[in-house]
Amino acid sequence: MAEKNGTTIVLLSGDMDKVFAAFTLASSAAAAGMNTTIFFTFWGLKAIQKGNLTGKSFMGRMVGLMNRGGLERQGPSKFNFGGMGRWMFKKMMAAKGVTTLTELRQACIDLGVHFLACKMSMDVMEIKREDLIPEVEDVVGAATATKNAAESSVQYFI
Amino acid sequence: MEGITADKVQDSVGQACPMPIVHMAKNMRLMSAGQVLEVRADDEGAHADIPAWCEQTGNPFLGEEPSGGFFKYYVRKKA
Image (cartoon, rainbow over all chains, first blue to last red):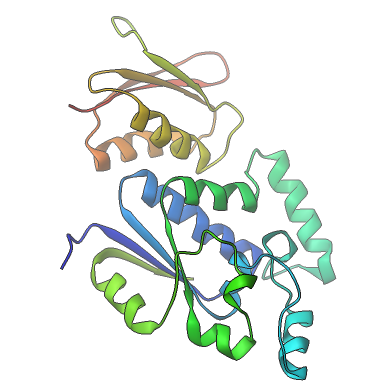
């Protein structure tokens, strides 16, 4: 087993605020030299989707339409008010020098954070590999996430 | 700080967490052992975060000094 100096983050949520937390912790862990992995599952997949419409079946297309992926499209978990909240939080964050989600994700990529996508969630929601950004290293199952977690000394579930 | 000459200066004034640390890690990767990085930051969190990063990575934290509106933090790249 590899040296236990890793950080594993399971990102289940696609909410703007929670994705912020995941990318902030991941970039900080990678900056500190830790081998860092984010396992994107269920709604978390939205954070690594290109943002195009997805789905094949009727229900799959409805999920793709109602829960469209893409980083700049996501609202916060509270006070979203049908999109107003997202606009408001973006303004407030910019005023305080907080970086954008897209820049933060890029910082993670630059620092070598590993992006893994959950195959089962992709199947359920009819999201294809081509719907994800190319920086996603692999499409995997829970056993890979478990192995990563076992090699990590720090684990977060968001 | 007296007696310390920075080999590189990083301007993180106006940046919020985690960007000062992200840029610091990137800069330190490009520097050679023994060189000193001066990080200028006004984020209050950096006060704790920069020494914490140094402790975790083993790069010596040399100190800090106020400089009108922001702080200068000095970090040496470990051998």
